[in-house]
Length: 258
View 1 (cartoon, rainbow, N blue to C red):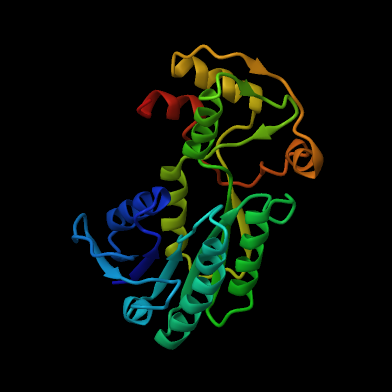
View 2: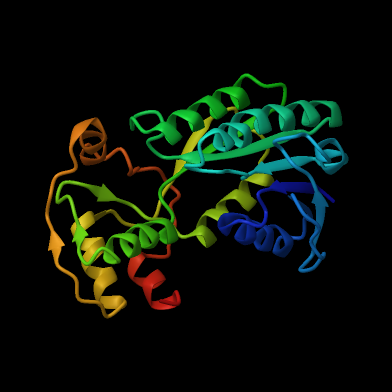
């Protein structure tokens, strides 16, 4: 039986990936920085990518690693997880004879001038130049991330929607199923993209969210300034890649708890 180790297994995507892998019959393991009770067909190992503690032990015996561990927008700690941690993981994977490492990145990561995106590009480079056969999957923004951003703006009493920005939110359950399928296909040595089933303008996504959450907030249609705004308006957060997810933004809003 193929043994699959998932880093970042306790995160939003990680939980969905663990469920998909267990459902597909894999020997599923996951890392966490603290003890967790085994369950749902998953065995947990204590490992800290930032210090290397427990990483070699967690990787031992794994055939495939799905590398999801991330720490966005947390300053130096972000680099410790994304770069130092990825280097530590790759070294341990080489020693353990891991056959395939799948790394999850972000659509537009190489075209959007954002600090966290630049860090992800560096991590991608580590994987590509590393000692373990690899596949890189760049995904569009998660439904939950879009909702989190909208909720944050709503607390200010209004929302801002750049009419020129298009997004393509993807459901973590769809992405998890896609990653589980890649486990069985072997390394490609390619960077592939995966997005949601539809592209929406920022204004459309905002209006749908307000209706679903039964909120009344004024929506200011303003252009995001600078290079970041230009990159977003150029469509760099979207992809035409296939296959794509199936769960739409509207479906997510109906299912998710407000």
